[in-house]
Image (cartoon, rainbow, N blue to C red; front, side):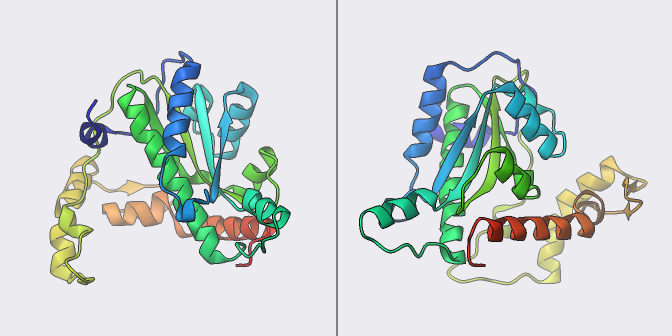
Length: 254
C-alpha cells in the first residue's frame, strides 16, 4: 500500500478477528517504530510489548474496561523514558539532567512519533490499530502493573490486530482550522462558526433532542457533549492530578 494511501485510509479499529500476529509482522512493526525520528537520536522513549492475556486483561481493567485491549493480539505501551539514558550517561562519565519538563516533553514527542510510524506500518500490512490515551488517566496504576523504574511514565497505549471489518474514516475539520500562514492567525467568532458548522450540524442530526449523560449533564451541542458529558470537568481534573502525581513519583522535576 502506498504510504499516502495508508495515511488517508487509517481509521481506529476496535474489533479484531483474534488471529495472532506473526513474529515477522511484530518485528516489522517494532522496527518501523525504531526508525522514527528522535530528539538528538537519543531515543527518549521505550515500548512495552504485551501479548500475555493476563497482562492485557490487567491493562483493560486499568484503562476503564475498553474490551478491545484484551481482544487485540498485540498491545504496545509507549513511554517517555529517561531511565536508560540516565544509566548510560552516568556509566560513561556524563551528567544526567534530563529529568525536567523539557525532556519529559521530548520523551512524549519521541514516543508518539514512534507510535505513529507503527500505526502507518500496521495499515500497510493490512492490520488495524487504535490509540488508547487513558493510560495517562491511570498513569500510576500503569507504572505499577508494568514494573516501571524511576524516570519512566506512560504516554499512550496502542492495540493492534487483524480487523473484523474496516471502519469508516472519521471526518476532519477543514485544513484552515489547523494551518496558519506564516504566523498564528487567531480565530474570530465567524471563523469558529464556519470551521465547526458541519461538525455541529452532524451532531444535531444524530441527537435532535440533545443528550443526557450518565453524570446527569445535558448536552445540546457537540461542544457541550465533549466537555460536559464525555470529558466532563471532574474526570479531567482527576486525570490531571493522577498524571501529575505519576510524573513526580517517577522522579521528574515538574
